[in-house]
Length: 519
Image 1 (cartoon, helix red, strand yellow):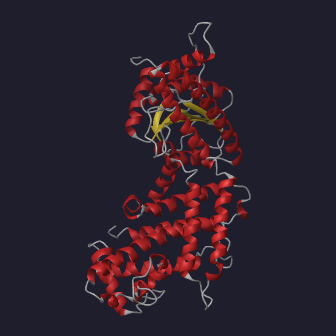
Image 2 (image 1 turned 135 degrees about the vertical axis):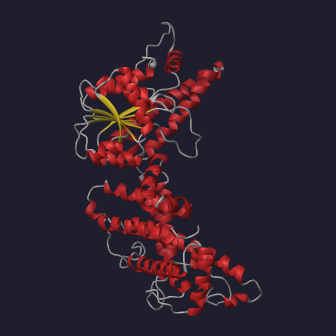
């Protein structure tokens, strides 16, 4: 073999082999960039292929398949083959051993669905840890407890000297290895069953506490001896410690955090409850919108504690497929994307809970609705105001603005908090079915639609059709999906199935509404 495996690569394969011998069927290995994932994959396959004849290394990209197969031939592991994930699924190959090579979250989900209830197959998921965006991506994340290392120190060395020698002996690349049950990768811990979350959480806490204690002791040695090598090692271990915190955060939200946010929501509801309806007994759209925004922001705030970069990427990939890359990246605001990601995460988390048929998913629907609300406000309020302000510059010209964009006294521009989904049809100048009710308002809005809102390639007929379809769907959302947290009679209990139908419909409609807009 032209390239000799490094000790940590061979030890990693040995670790996986021992776990499999102990009955583990799902194993995660996380290594930093440059650790030699191809070599580790082939070494694991070589270690296990005599026991599992139908063995595959599964990758997403063809170039990885080529390099893996070259190394497989070089090492003489003839019964192992590297293939694409697409081929595995399309050809319905029966794999006794699957080594997943750096699969993205969405790809891992497809593999999980493909395997179904088949727990007899061995799945080893090999990848890189994903770090929070607030942190610069470190070179290494490692699990110090993975391997037994023979440390060459004399018998008189004290415990601190042995600990220091131990970390220096391990070097810069130390894979993090965990076995799981209901999930194929520990990075997917958020989707694990409550029971497995509890088990993994205890393991992670134990490893984190051991590492934190080691770092404390090593810091004393490093500062007292001015050991630059050890100081660098401590910095890298600190990054690993933060990664443990990310994984632990994915296990769930503390009761104290939930109670605090719930108290805030209840306080606001009590404060606003008398204003939810006007004197005619109709919903006060402005007050309702304020409450819904507060609830949605509260959920996003809570979710931030558990939404790691890895999980964010998982949900982003799914939503991009549903709404298209262009709409997701170029048409939605950061705020809307945050609502949609949070909705998707909360929906999947709730699916893992017990007594799912008794859960009300209306809060998830609210988050999706808020994304639509934000996008309508950005275009039909903020952008339209800018357009009107540029069109009517002379003093007193505000009287020529459509009344729906002005306050009750018709003396000033409508406040942002008073623009709601219920404002949309009035801003356009049509009724609920899209029929023109105010020709002046409608003509003014269609000028805006032509000049600013839609791409120039969209003709007049298509613009009118799109505007009327937009109004029709917004009205449907406004009437059919009203947040029950404000008033329990305004929206029926929402089941998981109904919530999923609503989300899929809204993704589709938002794509249709936004895809031909300029920005």
